Image (cartoon, rainbow over all chains, first blue to last red; front, side):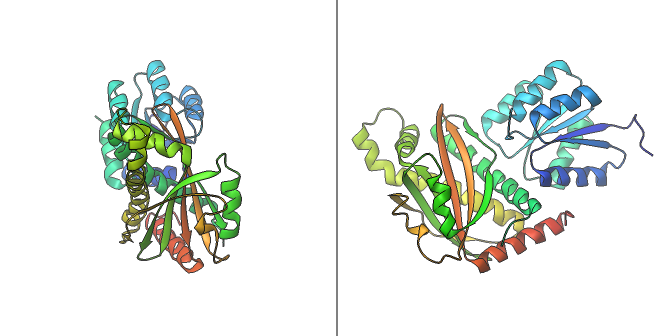
Length: 124
Length: 203
């Protein structure tokens, strides 16, 4: 049975495949975590207000507002939420922008190793 | 032949990884941030490719193409509006060159841009599918929708069209990345994709 005290992860990615991959790896390695999903930055902000997740995995290049902007807005209102940028946008400027606001950076492709890195940050 | 929703999503995401790598390399070359839209993937017959390009906002093109062979064969092509090509070259070599000097570099510079973007996309496919694809040297051409050679030929050939919007130094550059595949190669690509999705437990 789902326990509301278990960590809640919000996966934000416009790609259904990416959301499915992250969900599969997390379900495998952290079966007690609860998972919710958003496909845009705007939707992620709404879900954060509704569900107060502990962790957020955020893509960058999405339709609508960028993941960086969405993560920044979440960070301002909820500094306690740990956010990982999980993105193919591996430019130094993206890494720097993330690092400046305390957001961890994980480059795609999504693998057990990259999600392991994200989980280690979430649990640190 | 068509793509189902998961195949289209997966190809878009794999190319997104490739384009992301390419943007990282390009941003180092132009010393600026390269903003990218999420790629849009469509699969069309060769005869419909002209409509895709004719429907876009530009008429004169600068193209860079490379042939890739391996588990499947594909002609990969980067198509930019011609007006953007010179601007990209200017960003690459700096502001000190005259238009005449820039024009001399154009062929070479566009080949390099094409080489980076096309190889990054094909490498992302090859890496995730655990296969090897060999590419020829890039060839640069100018043309319009009347003279683009890839629009002529086997009507049955499939064209995988990837549209990406790039913004460099406040210059919006819209580019199309086209992959021309025979029906047999298209099927091989989709087989590789389905194998990958199966490996990931998504099929």
